[in-house]
Image 1: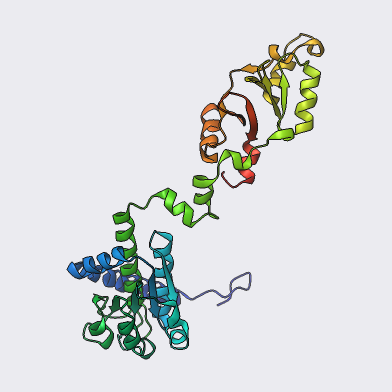
Image 2: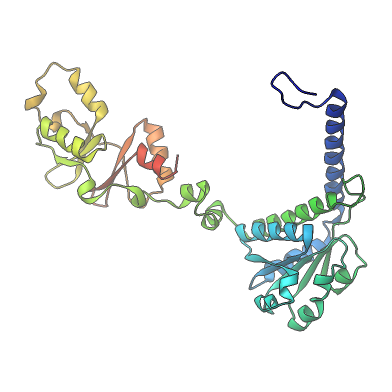
Length: 335
């Protein structure tokens, strides 16, 4: 059926069919996840302990859809404090077994427990001596019996109406992997700051790692004048440095005040002759300031709390060493 703009529209019957199919799929996968709760037992705890005691890396194995899930579990473990990586079982038989060491723990995924590419590796893994955790839907399978610990992710039925395409089973495996990762995260006391070190390019990494010293204007780029500087000269300093403000220092080089674009607008409201004024009579004294080791996110919070757009950065002697404004934080991705 074509709509007025010539796009294909489903019939009412098709709409109902699509919705019913989606809801049935979601229901079946929710049931598959619910079945996992009774399997969080001593075996799960044993698997967690083996992973906690690992002094090296966790190596994930899996073929096909299980391989995709294994890859995701490896990424989740690695980003939450448990070093992990994925090895393709087919490639392992042709040289990549050399990536696995005796001190690693192997976590192998195969819903049937009989995936030939993984079963082929079992003698080598046993000879290597790496602890083996299996995640299958078949407790009596070759892989399950060969493992040190078996995690059962068996589901009653796949969401696929043919009961063929891995759907509910892959969801169950993924959730079991998340359960392992989060259990380890909490046991290790993994913090948001630790997470940021694993994600330095992400928004969280920028908020938790980026310091004021990384983005501040310093040296010749720092707008700065003395208290006895005339208004016109201070305005020239602001214009040349392009930060919309300037630090004002006393005879000891310590921060005495700040003069901003906002102060300029307020100055223009007065009837006095600004050309002959010293900046000390127009500045905002004792301004809010930052220090170089402060997190950029903390500087942003200061600006928001005090409703200001710029901060002077001072050292331990209260002498200006830099300056930042909202544009710098926006450019750095902190905002």
